[in-house]
Image 1 (tube, helix red, strand yellow):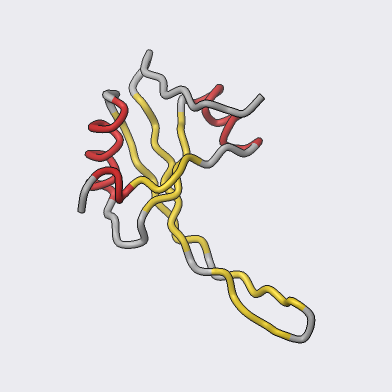
Image 2: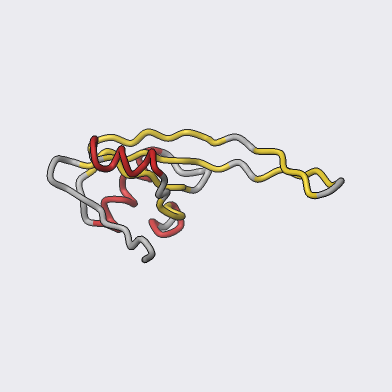
Length: 95
């Protein structure tokens, strides 16, 4: 699997922003089949940074209703990546 297929998008939330500022951790949505080692290799390749630790978790399906129709949002995987001291990844956040 290629690096750009493993990393789907950065997650920019209040919680992830605090983690980035306080603990130098960056959060990404990643491919469900990706392992921690693949995520680490992809982050190091794409952003040219050193990764110290990768934590992954599977986020559960959520039920959604539209009128009388019931469906489910898909399951997805989140990776929290701690970067080495002095390393950063900057995202473009809209104006």
